[in-house]
Amino acid sequence: MSKVVLITGGSSGIGKSIGTFLTEKGYIVYGTSRNPKNYSDSSLKLIALDVTKSESISTAVDTVIKAEGRLDVLINNAGVGITGPIEEIPEAEIKANFETNFFGPINVIKAVLPQMRKQQGGLIINITSIAGYMGLPYRGVYSASKGALEILTEAFRMEIKDFNIEMTNLAPGDFATNIASGRFHAPVLENSPYFIPYGNTLKLMDEHVDNGKDPLLMAKAVYKVMNTAKPKVHYKVGEFMQKFSIVLKRILPDRVYEKLLLNHYKL
Image 1 (cartoon, rainbow, N blue to C red):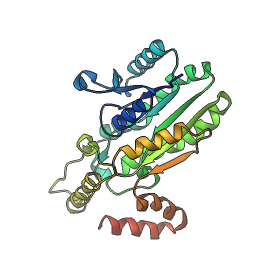
Image 2: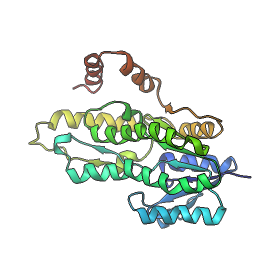
Image 3: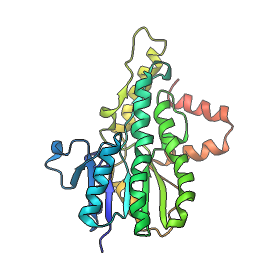
Image 4: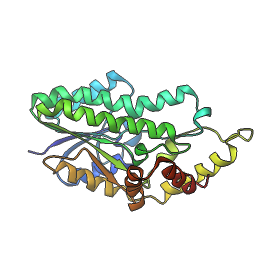
């Protein structure tokens, strides 16, 4: 029997790549978008889902279960970027980022767990970010929201272990997607004390995304995790130095590691 997969944020970027790849592998895949009508040419089955709205989440999950009778894999992929000096990012934008990147995945997990318990098995993959392992300058809010999801998964895994439900994190580095265009960018203000360093860092961040890896690598990583009997707690996918930066953070003194980041961002 083909496994049924639900991917949040499946209309573009990493989510679309994962959905297309898994469909080719024979899985029954449902992608989601806040506005599926905008993607009428999508090769995936797209259903409406806004991860910031509980009713929308319930409706989407119920739609899949009613159509297929089961839900085997949830891939929490929907997320948004945010950049800016923390001092200058409006509080409402910080909260909005956490609503999508942190509270959204929690609520989708809550919605699928009863069905997975009922069928005595399931897999949940949370797409986080290598940025969630460290506080990055002018990406602090994004780092915090993804880091919070990483830690939450560690706790969640232990709470659901008796139900034969697996959960893991998959953290990408920079990939060539449209995430930069969808970010909230705090404006680069000429009268801001952060004008020069933030402006330069923003250009560097966009270059990293433009020169990022092919999202197909993430799709293949998801497929590998799905075919692993006992997934690890954390997986990382990206450039060697991006992954190695996590190792360096573990072994270097904090001030030394901070200096490396400052040099990297030319701050």
